[in-house]
Length: 154
Length: 416
Image (tube, rainbow over the protein chains, first blue to last red):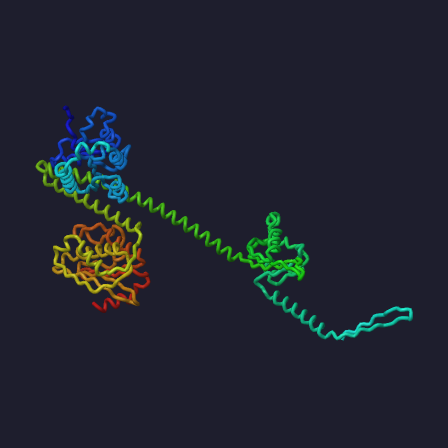
């Protein structure tokens, strides 16, 4: 059995500064070894559904966690979320919306579409690092990952 | 007595037949009939607000009262014998409105309607008209009576109401647009302005924390300035957004125990309040008709100001109480803090207006603007009294502005 190295976190973020700060915070807390950073919603969906440049990807190597920004080029965060949660192959992957916005309507739509967590990025980087540490600890270590059968269509 | 003599020619010559009748009764009847008719004409003529006219089955006018003259401009002499169609709009006649109206009146006996009528000078007016068909004892149609009332004024005011309503609807729609614009504005403020701020803070902090062995003391001090500025701007954005949300939010008025709102607000004050030596004096407070959530925001802002500006006092005293004038409650919040020069009192409630230097007392200058906006949305008013080094007192009402009278303050000062 040859499996490509599994991805711990799929980071969907178009802003390079935000991406760098998030990656920096994740590296510092040492909870994630393999992080894949994609820059827009279309690329995120290509990866998740093994399409386009990711068509050769092993379907079983799903990310343990998706960190999703709201404002993204092409497909925005909520559209990406909708597609993930509407497909049996991806529905069980935990998705966290990690965003600047604390708009009630975004939060409501996010939860209605089945997001697993909604986090507003604090302006203060020290606080942000603490948030990233906690979420990494919880979702990658404390939380039991969904078993393979969870990804079969019922 | 009625005596009639009739010549009667006969072969024997002319004879005269005489008939003598007692006609007292008939004469009286005729007289009474004439009197009645005069009285009736006078009565009809005295009616000034209604045009009462009659016309024969062919449409020729047979009577015309003074109300008709006043309303339509024609005198009785001018119009009697003329056709009623001259009182109608040309297009109404062409469309057969008059004929139809008469037909309906003749069938039903009586019809009521509204429509345009034309005066002698050609101007038109809107009238309410009752048409009655007149029939003799044999049931034969002998004409019509029409009673009109010009109601142009009423129609104009109805039209005015309709215009006002549509204007109002338009304003509401415009307001909706403004609200949506404001909403998208605060959305982009909360999203787009926060993002670069996060980057400034993030990279400065990484520099400071991970590269400090390579940095001079000055470089670290400058980085601290950058971080402080970023934190301050973050606070400004949050405060401005909450100010904008108050304007958008619907007022949810209810009977509210002010005392419990004050106690909840104290719990939510910044941690400084707990760490300091503060004497809280809370007098019995009334129940008021207001939005509890927004009023809590008022107290959080006023009380955290009081806590902040009493920082230099060995014992801070913060009082909250109420006074009543003509049944209207004035709430006050008083502290024994640094106070300020009353010349600047009117500046205090402006957005970003601050009376103290940032290094003495931190702040964004949005808090009191928020307070004033909430109180004004309740139809109330807030004023402030202060002297340097002798504390500050805020007075506010949640009722009409005019009721926060000077005597509320005088009573207040007497109590001190």
